[in-house]
Image 1 (cartoon, one colour):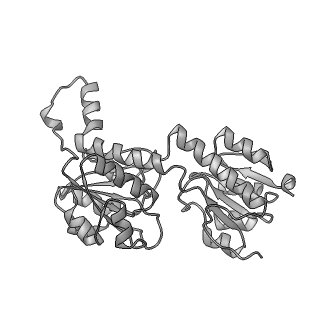
Image 2: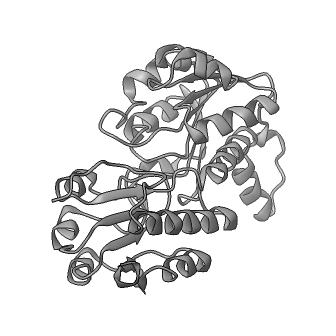
Image 3: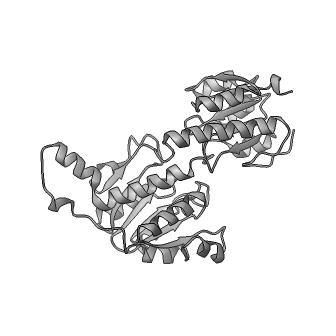
Amino acid sequence: MEEHRRVLVADEIAPEGLEILRSGAEVAVKPGLSEAELVAEIGPFQAIVVRSRTKVTARVIEAGRALEVIARAGAGVDNVDVEAATSHGILVINSPAANSLATAEHTIAMMLALARHIPQAHVHVKAGQWDRKRFTGVELAGKTLGIVGLGRVGRLVAERARALGMTVLACDPFLDSGRITLSGAMPVNLEGLLSQSDFVTVHCPLIEETRCLIGKKELALAKEGVRIVNCARGGIVDEEALYEALVEDRVAGAALDVFEEEPPLHCPLLSLENVIVTPHLGASTREAQDRVGLTIAEDLLRVFRGEEPDSPVNQPQRV
C-alpha cells in the first residue's frame, strides 16, 4: 500500500517534489549523510532519493534490507552502484530530461566565456586594470563545433550553436547518421570531429567506455588551437593529458564544469590562465532544480503504484 512506503530523501530537492512524495509515501528528509550514517539509516526505507552529492554504494545497498527503488533526481548515475542495485533486485530510476536545457545553456555560456575571456577580463577590471588587447577573443560564428554524444543535451547544444552561426559536427555510437543529420549536425567519427573542430564539447555519460575518451592520443589528433568544453562528467576528458596540451599551446583553452575529483582540490588545470571553471553548475538553475524534484517524485510514486517508470536505468529481477 502506498501509505506504508517510506522514502529517504538524502539530498535536497524542490519543496514541490517533497509535496508530491508526501502525497503517496512517508518521507524523511536527511541531507548530508556520510556513507556510514546512510548505512545506519537506510534499513527501513523502501526508496532513497539522491542528487549528485550522495553516493549510493554497494555497502549502502547491502544495508537497505527493505530497499526497492533508488531514485536519482538528475541525469548521471555514476554516484549509484547500479550493478549492486541490480544484483539485489533494486530498481534505479533517474530524471535525465529535467535538467537538459539548463546544462545545454551552461555549455553555450561556457563556450562564449571561453571565446571572449570573460572571467579573466572580469577579474582584471575588478583589480583596477584596463588592458583590452590582452583579452582579444574569437567569434563563434563561422567556427566548427564538435559534439561528442548527441543525446538530449547534445541536441539542444547543437540547436543553439547553429543559431549562433556555427557548423556542427557530431559523433555518437548509439545514433545512425540519419538521426544525427536530422539534428542539424554532420555525422563524423571521433577522429574526424577532433581534426576539424574549433570547439569540442562532450555530452555523454561517464561509463567504462567513455572514461578518458578525450585523452593524449585524441588531443594529439585535434585541430591546433581547439577549445575544449566539458559540462558532462569529470573523467571523460583526461585532465593530465588536457593539462599537457594546454601548456604546450596545442589546445587554446578549456572550460570545465566537472572534474575527476570534486571539489578539484589537487587539479593542476586550475593553475592555468586559459582554463575557466565552474563548480558543477550545469543543472543549477531554479527551473531545473524544480523539474528534477517534481519529475523524480512523480516517477517514484508511479513505481509504488505498480506502473512502469518513465526513466528506468536498469531492469532488475526481484529477489
